[in-house]
Amino acid sequence: MIKPIYHNGRIISLKLKLNITGYKNMRCLKITMVNKNLLEGEDLFKGIYKTLMINKDFLNFGYQKIIILSVVIISESEHNLHSNILINNDTPFEEYYSTISHELAKYNNLQYGYHNETISRYVILAWNVDNAKNLLIKQTYTTNKLNKINKSPCSVRSYSTLTNRKWFKGLIKPISLYNKKGILKQQHIKPIFTLDLETIYLDSVKSEVVIAISSAGLNNGVLENKIFLIDPNLLLSNYELATKELWNQYFSYIKSILENNITIEGKLVIFAHNLGDFDGYFLYKGLMSCYNPENVSSIIDDSNSFISISCNALGDLIEWKDSLRIFPMSLDKLCSMFGVTGKSTSYNPNFNNLELFKTPYLLEEFIKYSLQDAKALYEALFNAQNIYFNNFKVDIESVYSTATLSLKIYRSKFQEDPIFILPSNIDSFIRNSYYGGGTDVYKGFCKLVYYYDVNSLYPYAMLNSMPYNLIKFHKNMDNIKLDNFFGFIEVEVLCPLDMKRPVLPYHNKGKTIYPVGSWKGVYFSEELKAVTKLGYTFKLIKGYEFSKANLFESYINYFYNIKKNSTGVERNMAKLQLNNL
Image 1 (cartoon, rainbow, N blue to C red):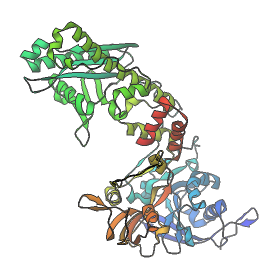
Image 2 (tube, rainbow, N blue to C red):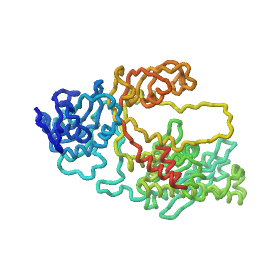
Image 3 (cartoon, one colour):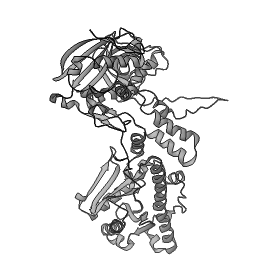
Image 4 (spheres, rainbow, N blue to C red):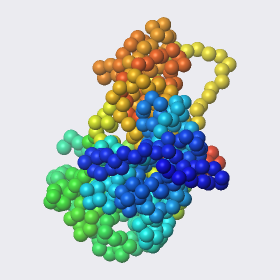
């Protein structure tokens, strides 16, 4: 018999039954509680926790334990209320509750959906971490809100990824830009250089040939804008030797930068605006002709475009990156975005002829034109570097694309909870529910109409609740209502034959169609709920149920407010970050 526990004059204990059972060959204590006193809110969880902490079986089960709390509803489906948390017999309720309250808030605010059904019982699973057999469970992470960790083991506020260990293969965790002493790991932006190439079409080799390489960057604090020109006479007699000598001039210059510039440590990053599809081809070929191929490496994407090219044959590592991936816009727009003058000399069609080397005024114009691109790119990127570092302590030197830039800002400044990485079998199931946007072509005619543009629709959608912690895989969903489920489901669809504009997509032999009639498919629960009002009906077959989380709210609101209330650089930057996370 459990003695009553009183709080503010009310009994807050719960009735329980104890069941010690094996769980995946690890000793586990299973405790079931019934809320006969109809406790609500914080009192409910205090009642659960206090009831545990006066139970001898629970206390004797081990000093350190990892616990997980679930709720079972009348239909016998079980739902996690919070992630695994490491506690011990001396952990006070306030510490337990403050660590997991952000997850329990979803329960208190009736956001789970299954509150439409009666809750029959609460289930606690506890693993004895003192037990050597349970050491695998000690894969915990510390909540990022915890600033101080006492020496006592009970003070470490941790979650364990074991909650559904088989469901996940890893975590995307928040990252810290500060060391353990609270000092910023990177104190200032790192030096960068830029590269730009000019080519002409050479009839003798039936291809484009590099005739000029321009560079820009700070060399010991002084902006240096250099150009290297091909030997036109040698080019006509020996194309390969001429281009090799041109690249050797450039690489020798970069080597001198590395040797003499005291501000460069470890690696030098050089940006080219369109490394992926143009400059990278010539650069890679130049490196392979001048150095041992073993010293040259590259990262390419699925379309065989260069993401980066690296060479470690010049003393330190040099990595060329594509600035177009970080800022997907023309050089002119990039310069405008970051307040740089940009090009002042227009392209002259006569530049595409070797005769320019015999015409002094044309050659001078060509050199001026060639230098300006590298210089303009450098100045734009340098401004961008400072803006991003000052605002977010993130250096664009360290990223490869606007998506990785956005992700780094999110993980270091806005992410609170880890994001789970699913194994391939679950990921493949869920990806069956991914469809492109529906595109229809109409022959239209109208007069005196209003035109509406939806503002930031994609970021707006990111404010919705996202599938977060995988709760359960349901092999049979006959007894589960769609309104009470959040996740991804295989369903049998019935669309009325007389529906004029069907909206639910279906993959058919590599094409996305919008059919009527019946078929099977995998869909996100919220999409199914949205189309039921149009006349669709569903038979639920199987699916993965998730908890909900608002993962991106602070990030989206931050950048949307900047976009809404700013102009120029700040607004364009905010728009990039909103659309590319």
